[in-house]
Length: 231
Image (cartoon, rainbow, N blue to C red; front, side, top):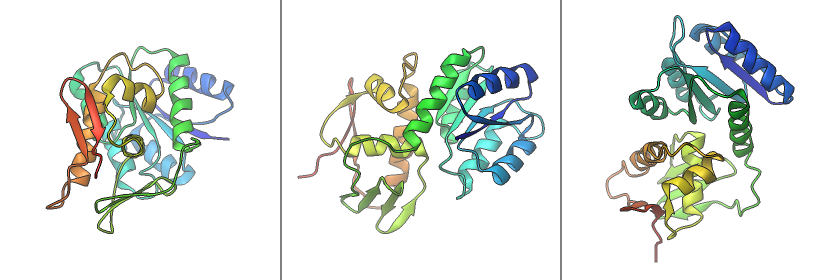
């Protein structure tokens, strides 16, 4: 049984999400502030975290940063939840490694669907070839969720890895932002293509930070992105 941690300081939201997730068979843990959330994450090792931004003591951005900064939890999917609707807040959440960002008010059914999609993708149950790829000096190993450059391990979030693996397995093909949103996130993302742009930028920063490292993900202006096909 997958274990979900729901973090929010509004009791009625906790109750709604707890009911909706438990009805789908998930075990639900709850926290009402950032400190309690970090304690539960360390002690209970949840499979996914639904995390509000505006929390007492430690805010959601700081909690997300702590999750991604700990080797034990950096691969745990995080869905951020916030009443804020500004683009900057969404971008900041994604910059910190959140896998998804949901703005209040929201549909419990939609959020549960997003939880299912994230857990399904994190489980890596796809039928495609899962053998490691070696491109230039970059190793991509889907079984271990591992990326190495010249033998040095790089820290990618689960969503960054999934996006990289999808493109790398299809080198040379161009994919639109909307198509990548549908394939990687698993649902219609209300046309917010910035999500893909932010993740692509993070991947590039991590893969191309060493001198002489080849740019592997190319931007096709007016269309989308492709993984460079090496001859």
